[in-house]
Image 1 (cartoon, rainbow, N blue to C red):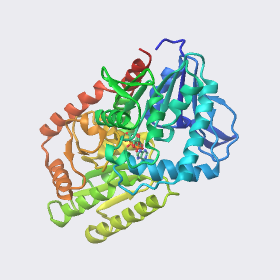
Image 2: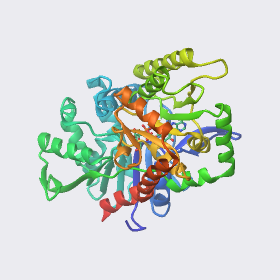
Image 3: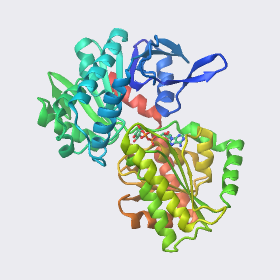
Image 4: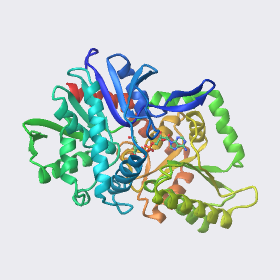
Length: 459
Ligand code: ADQ
């Protein structure tokens, strides 16, 4: 991509959020890899970010922040219920995650999804410089590629799906399957976290649209569409630098002291039913019950950020996990020495890294996960090559982090045994495994991911 070519990023959220400062409300850059990966690319050229501000019925005008031009797209209170909570998070999210909860099909939600996608497409088409590149993100905006193409055939259009693309039988149940596929086929490049996502998309496109396979690409309306994997990653250097900071190391020591010098098994997630938080807690309880480990020797620390609290399934999940933590502590805790420490809030990056350094084992057990960046952050933070990652085979990260102990999160005995093996593992084996994962991670940082995608789109 050359420096003069414009780039427009289109995502559900803008890369900023409002905070209350001394002079009233101000914008702050959102944490997270996507923003840090794209900022250097956006800065050097005419560029924009199209997205929602995070507040319903917001009348915010376009504004510049930290070198990025933001173009807000408004969402009403009603659209938050129907488009966001409804079609995005009660239809697409569960269905794309192997129907872990029954997806609900509502024509009203679908109409809202289409209307909101039109609005994003209008905003992108109105702001994109001639012949520029438009990069659309995630399941909220799958109709936008085709809608933008109809408005602006001069643009190069890319789409990246951050969550898994579902198995064919499941996708085929969606009443609007054809429209979703046609929406995505409006892109020149459709990116997925794993090759299986790209394969499923290709098969479904051939079954439900006029797309045909040609020389490893999809031929659709006399255009060529590339559908393949671009596994997302993290800013590896950022985590290794944090892990080497003295204050972060001191904080890690403090976490160890506060947990009584016991071995620490850590979980860090958004509070979501896809993440398998309950499976790993049950697996830990099984270890205590079978006396393979003693609560005097090991402690489970679970940090969970609240998420989508307006949706009933998420409120039920939160209540279920809190009950489970209570049960385990009731059975195995002592006064002043709980078996599980449960913290329900967001941690700043340096605190998270201190936890990663303090943890002997990180247990990441999603039932389905596009990638899972927490697993990668742990590996990047283990600069001395010790520590063990127990990782679900149903996460995208399992394909790359080859030194992890892979588990089937539905198999409680298997997860228990893996956590036990992780706690027992010799330092030599830990180092061998962690080095393997670190090498894989260093080969694919979030900057490589963005370069790879944009090179495919513009090359
Ligand atoms: P998420 O489902 O949100 O993302 P994940 O990849 O794990 O999941 O990213 C979570 C991010 O939030 C990480 O950077 C992590 O550090 C942070 N985080 C989690 N718990 C936190 C806490 N308590 N405090 C502070 N920060 C916390 C979706 C897909 C994933 C895919 C990403 C990126 O579901 O599969 O990896 O997009 O494509």
